Amino acid sequence: MLKNVITQDLINEIADEHAKGRRLYVLTANIEARRVVIWDMGAIASYRSQRALELFRNVVIASSSIPAVFPPARFKVKAGGQIYEELHLDGCLGMQMFGAIQLIQQIKDTPVKGRMFIIRNGKLYDDPVQIRPILAEIAKASVEMQLTNQAYMDLIRMYSLSKAYDIEFNCIFIPQDFREASKGMFDPRYMAKLFTSGYDIAMSKEPWQKIPIPDMGEKK
Image (tube, rainbow, N blue to C red; front, side):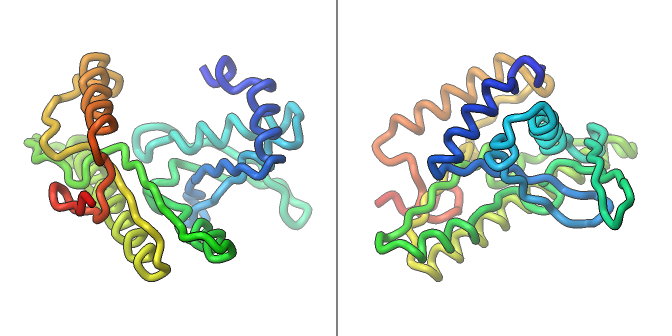
């Protein structure tokens, strides 16, 4: 699928936009080094080579490799004259949302008042679930709970930073009252209803919330 979507023409277009000053970053987690890695995808694309194309695809694979669900992506690196192999997973192991520090640094260097817009592709809190007391279900539920709570704390951190540096904060997320259940990872019926919900919010008078608390955001 990636070979059909991420082509040489695509990374050439990304390289062109990178040269104009636009930036595309992707986060992965180096599971052995126990740290996250922020990849500058535009800089990679700027090499415009087959190796750059393969690296670009591999970073996308790594960033999509959910821990305990998909295997890690492998990266060959050279250090001290030796060839090593790094294992990278979805950057959610480190954080769900990133970039606030870089954004704030850029805003500080400009004379205009900064604005921050965050789109969270999930609810702020998970809905209650009933699971059977077996290892697989307990592990899955534990990872899901950890990721959701981590995302919320990332959002709180970004909100706090925006207040500290006088940056206008805006966020949006899936409403807590959206109750449609998904039958599998890519359920068309669920995705269509989720799209409709998002569309209705986007077309409302004021879709953005000013504080990251469900149903209590300042609308003006």
